[in-house]
Length: 76
Image 1 (cartoon, rainbow, N blue to C red):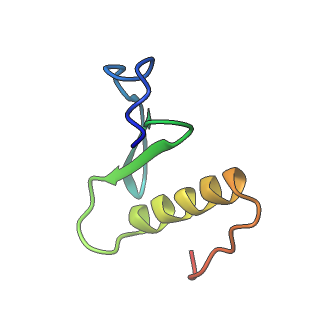
Image 2: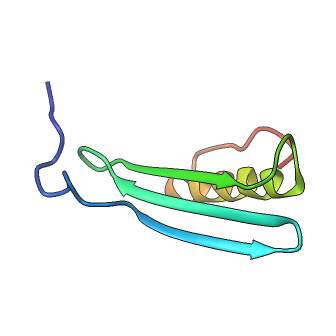
Image 3: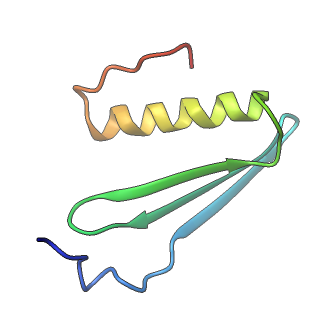
């Protein structure tokens, strides 16, 4: 079993917050064990807002940049 990378344990995530007319979007990136990175996106809107759609599109773009063989599915 592979454990967490001891060099990255205890390191706080890097955070950015963006605000505009559609609301606020918070992005957090944190190193996980090995070569994995956990990217979390949150909004201050409820339901399927325009900010949620932008956040999903952002995650799709990041995933495609990290893995060019990834085929996005959905209308983001």
